[in-house]
Length: 386
Image (cartoon, rainbow, N blue to C red):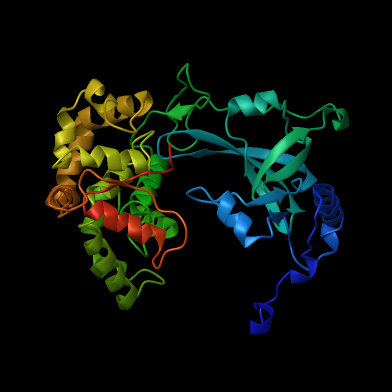
């Protein structure tokens, strides 16, 4: 059918087999000749060829049990480690980033990749100038598999991890239970920028048009220095920036105004509290009428909330106990950002309160839309059948 509509398909490669050994042989044969194909491929899908059996075997909440994807071995290539740079995340984490001679892996040119933390660098015994083996995990994320010490010339320098933040130059700190060094300066330029980028992101306040590059430009121009500044941008001056005319400035202004009425859980997620993802943010939001209700909870009270573990409880308690954070939240509310849990108030009056839902199979709307409707009317969502 897809062929008849003009789409390019791989139907010529589809085969039917009655024995599993035949399937294995065909997959191995296909993998051996993947470089000869006119398109990229990272595996093959094996299905039960019977509607009756498919119905009998069934499916989970997110995939059919009658089909499986067999992934080929990840592509690999060699390169030279030219140097290491250090990036600062929104929570102060210091991530070493390897700079390598550009190399093509699965059709993608790679010139930099994360080394994750100091322990990984030490475990892999990496040195500047090393020949390294690069792989794309799942044919997507590149990483260093290993180095080749036997190819060294004898003068390769060690990788020296910094003792101070590469941006603000404050001393770094590593908790005993963690592998990551951190900058503890909350006013570090890199952290401030990354926090604003996270706050405006799609899964947080979803401010369309205010992406990474624009946040950085506004910060460098002096228009932004924290998330509160987003709601006080001088649009008369912004229109004078290169690439930002009246039309795009007005669209951005509308997006910022719209974000003020985002659900409370999006705001909580957007605050960038360590260990608080989207699911935990929703759980926290469900327990309060107003964001300030979280100011007065103890760690023990956070711990009894569903989806809140020990680390999340501790970091959430510390965040809302910090006077500077409370001041920023007060200023956000003064700027018009909704701190009320409107969804909870509406949900309490909804007909789905106290009920749980799990969506599977094909629907006449997007699953995310159906889940949003359930939550709006007081229902709760399950991730899987327990």
